[in-house]
Length: 184
Image 1 (cartoon, rainbow, N blue to C red):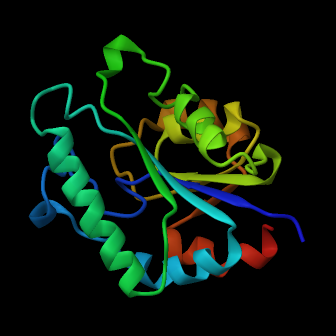
Image 2 (image 1 turned 90 degrees about the horizontal axis):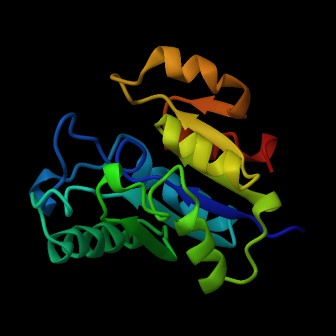
């Protein structure tokens, strides 16, 4: 059986995205419905699970890297309590105007994951995200792409332009997890 890697965006996939702001601390973090139930299913199906998240709130000074690390540490504990796992979290703290290699849709975080986990094969990887940049990130690395349709403010015109880059669409991570046998 082939080994598969799962790349997950965070805001809008794992937790509720705060429109126009950032999750700055644990009190602002809220798991989306079905995520904690989905994570054990995903842990059984995927050899490696990584989170790739743009976090320019750090560059904007609305939170620190230490704040982000505290949120991620608590998120991992809660996921592990339910029998799930995340093997690594990658984030890009730089501002989007700088267009750094790590910021999705650029592929720096995927390349870092491959460096840390040499067994990753992007032909056997899935990127799950709620934004156009997530889909382009996965597409740029030849991954299967999954759009989680939680982003109410997504640019519909831009979304139509990349429709051919989306392999699957689901309402949430639990729906995706329940359909994995039809994808892998």
